[in-house]
Image (tube, rainbow, N blue to C red; front, side):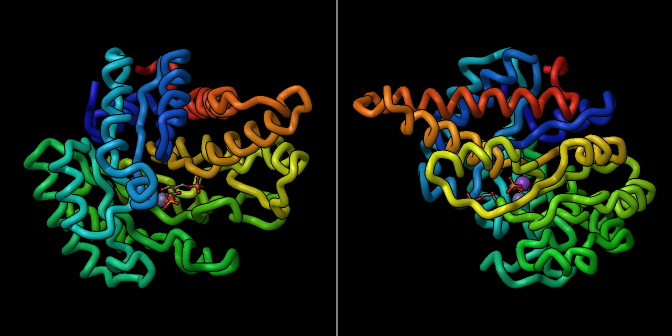
Length: 317
Ligand code: G3H
Ligand code: 13P
Ligand code: NA
Ligand code: ZN
């Protein structure tokens, strides 16, 4: 059934787990996410970005998720708009039937320029009013996730606990994206992690001040070295790079992280699986593209299941 983010995260908090939120833009991803959830009995969060809308079109994106809901009626599914750039875009998603929206007011509408605290509060508060009137949940964001910052700058852009408290009080958000050392995309860290990459102390401070808030961790791909190796073994040229270790995400879950955003890991699994499949001599004459997509879907499904299990959502559908 289609459910709100709030419903799923309240339940997750009660039971001390987190739910991976996978970005989707095609059918194979949706099917992989759902088959894995069905196999291990996990609730599901699927989210669409502006880029996903550009790729698939809003209508296809929505109906892919609705198809998943119809095919798996026993699994709670959140349909979430990732990184809404304005109240208008969030209103559009609400009207289209999304059960959750993110108002990303940490940046101006251009999604590049850092916004003031006041702008963020005003935009997010407006979205909360609209969304809550429709039973839709809202994720806000405070701090800078490091899309704009180099690795060294992360520290000074972490979410400030005083600001976070004021933001939550003034907006009424259901979930809060916090900056605790992660960044979007494949190139998070250029050296193997020695010690913690997440700033767990900051997360602890945030949880102490906001014990009932559901925290969201963006940029949570782990960049599996085995997929990196496969991509590069079959013609890829991805430079050395590292993501967020699963053990650290699990540590974050102890301090209130309830939604864990993952896009890049699925991209890596599908890219690696398709490169490997097409490179096999026995597939040199293969023209049935479904077999290539099938390889991608199988790889993504395994990855999704490992995340449901690691974050503890397995068994909680
Ligand atoms: O938040 C970023 C997600 O990874 C979406 O990426 O804009 O390329 O769809 P995208
Ligand atoms: P990754 O790039 O680490 O997968 O993060 C995705 C994300 O945060 C989407 O909002
Ligand atoms: Na989001
Ligand atoms: Zn994000």
